[in-house]
Amino acid sequence: MKTFLMKTDPLTSENYLEVCLRGQELIHDPFLNKASAFTEEERMSLGLSGLLRSSISNINAQRQRSYEMFSRKEDDIEKYIFLQSLLNRNETLFYNLLCNNLSEMLPIVYTPTVGKACLMLSHISRDDRGIYISPQNIGNIDKIFKEVSLPNVYLIVVTDGERILGLGDLGSDGMGIPVGKINLYVAAGGLHPASCLPICLDVGTNNQKLIDDPLYLGYKEKRLEGKEYDEFVERFVLGVKRNFPNALLQWEDFAKHKAFKLLERYHERILSFNDDIQGTGSVSLAALLTAMKIKKQQFKDQRFVVVGMGQAGTGISTNIFNMLKEEGLSDEEAKSRLFAFDVPGLLIDDLEGLTDTQKRFTQSRSSISNWKLESPNKISLLDVIKNSKATVLIGVTATNGLFNQDILKQMAKNVEQPVIFALSNPTSKSECTLEEAVIATNGKALVATGSPFPQVEFNGKKVYASQCNNMFMFPGVGLGALVSRSTRVTTKMFLMASKALSELVNIDQLNKNMLLPELNDIRMVSASVAKAVAVEARDSGLGRLLTNNEYEQVIKKAQWEPEYYPYRPAPNNCFE
Image (tube, rainbow, N blue to C red; front, side, top):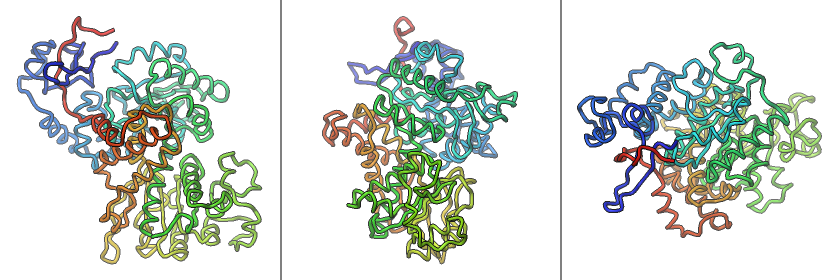
């Protein structure tokens, strides 16, 4: 049953919510609850008299009170629990608090703390949030979706919990990721929280520790695989299409072999994208575009080494390859400048067991026949960097310290201004720290990291690492696709989003060797990315025929501000 509708008064043009709930039900609804901010008139008309203390607060006073409580928490997990409890009690206040303290709270609601929280989610859970679809209830998917109380669902973030950050298979405890991503969609992109739905496909876990844990709350069976898994996902997607036909579906933290298959299978059937592949690839491309501006060079002047050819590495490599092609190189010329490294070592065309995706980025055995190696039977990462004369090094391996001093110093020998991207998160999985990159390259490296690192003082100068955070990309891409009413999300949309993001780095930031804008400007960033996506949707024949200025206005209007609406009681107390 829907619990409210958004309305506009035809006489006064006032926006308000027409609510069905009354009394305690209203207070315990996280989206509708205003707590002490209910007005006297609302208390009388909605059955709240006597249920609240007499003083009436505004949201600013409530935010101050909540921030005091947040500040009392002594560690990050306790802060995470507090914020999630606030989200489950009063969504509007939660987002008001988050948006006003974004730099401080972003590492709590998302990386790195969300990873720690997922590791213990069954132990710290207070309230379940979102929808859990399992083999036990997939047959009732239409009934489950019809019971969702949101008036309209436009965004779904879904995971099966098999590859959570760099932490592996966490089963349904991975639900912390879709919840966190939606927090960012709302805070950064401005999507309305009443249109966003996190979903976990609880198809089991191969993590024996979870199966043996008496407190684990998920489906305690081995994971569905093969045909059973494919049929399960197909039933889920068809259920989404039937019940939420206008929704964007974001695939999140699926295992590599499934993620590519799902993206390929569904990207034309439904409005969808995979943030781990396309989002990471696009925000990294934006940072690389900015690095080329600082270096006053082009992509074709570089030698790229990408370490870790999973979803993120493949997405990044694909974008680099496409940019090399855009600069006029042939396929073979582009491949000769891009060196992909994974568990087997350098990807070479005669290696066995490579995936189809990895085969796209192999070097020929003949092209490296004259390389000088430390060991004749193995090509190490250092060998690749030395022999390729790498100028750009990108890591997405979740291997702490992989970029050691020898590797970083070699990058500084290769080029005056090496580009070092240590993109794994959380912080404990980063390939190197900002300080390590700065010291090894004598302060000359252009650095981006996956997790936030504090600035470093070197030779009297402040050196910064740009946080290559997908938050710069996916909220704007989602918003742009939705406002344009596009039927699908395309590679070209992500390319235009990358270019728009890089253009937002101002002169002062360029002079500081920053590769991305400040996170504090994230609403503006998301609006610019959304416009680029919407305009490309229009120009490719997939989106609404609005002018650029009209899209700016539509996007501005679509970005929700976390303030309380006035409430009015619904006629007959319910909606169909």
